[in-house]
Amino acid sequence: MKNIQRRVIGAYVCTGVVPLFGLVQPAVVEPAVGDVVELRVPGMTESFTMVRCPGKSGTESERIPELYVLTTEVTWDLYDIYVYKLDEPEEGSSPLDGVSRPSKPYVPPDRGFGHEGYPAIGMTRQAAEGFCEWLGLKAGLAVRLPTAEEWQHLARAGDTEQQGLGSIAWSSENSEHSTHPVGEKQPNAFGLYDTLGNAAEWVMSDTRKPIAYGGGYRDNAEDCTIESFQKQTSSWNQSDPQIPKSRWWLADCSWVGFRFVIEADTLDPERLEELMHDNEEAD
Image (tube, rainbow, N blue to C red; front, side, top):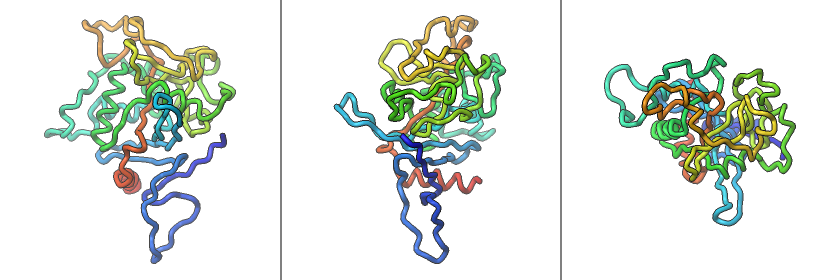
């Protein structure tokens, strides 16, 4: 599948035709499948980029809706805002005071790999879900983790055969024992970066133990596949001195992160336009 994308800016779809002043401006255009949108939530310094990905037809259990998907794994640039309350005023109350947030980490959470532009790692699935709740409340969007079936559909991106792993993923064969800045490898056909390797990604699941898909920087190539998943074990947080163990951080897991999705049917086009417009004004 050829990777064709349009970038949506404000109320217009960027196709190379610029509306002239004095002429009637086109109506708001809802992004189509393959369109890329850059969003910025008021009160936040960081924007984030999502692409509208096609769904999948089939029976009720097989059907996957069209999704807006974060093009990369969540980076520290965005996750730090959630952890350290960088979105809140220094004084006074915030409408998000009731949202649970992680405790401050007692060791450098990036493990010394790198921070700006690097995938956020080492959070529990509960923390990843908490981030989604927080961002959804701030943005007025239904933000969540993908299901396992959605994640596999997005990682496969319509390809029946996996691309050469070295061109799209950081694994033990090329990572030099570290995560890398997101988006350095080639995207898949849906325009998603690092679905395999770099950091494994949390998904929603009905299993008792949280599951992360796709493998990470420390995994062998055969463990960085669309079908590969890891179940959280007690060893991922063994050295945490707290009793009980932290609900937010995994002291011994440096290879798990996440990305988030929004179902296209739940997204109000006018709200989407506002967030794109806010991003333009911030620039």
